[in-house]
Image 1 (cartoon, one colour):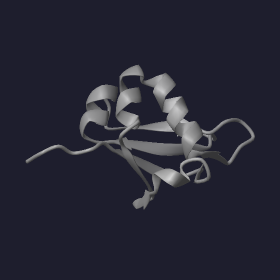
Image 2: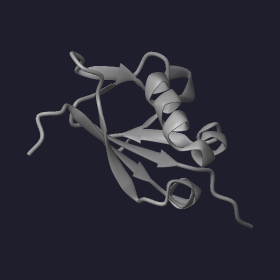
Image 3: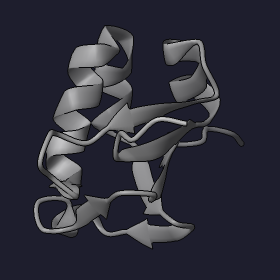
Length: 92
């Protein structure tokens, strides 16, 4: 078992298609127990180039609680959290 402080990212729909994985673990920066949701978004955009435009229109939930877009800069993702990325759904 790793000593890394990690969060779990869950990808749905087009986000899963863009990353080619249903989920992944992301290590927090050294000496840190959290990061802002905005910083996490930037990290994911760098890690998965095709995910960047999807993230701009996606919703997030942390531990099954939706996060308001206006809170992305202030909400902290902590060690052990589960972050779901939920792209917009189209349909008629």
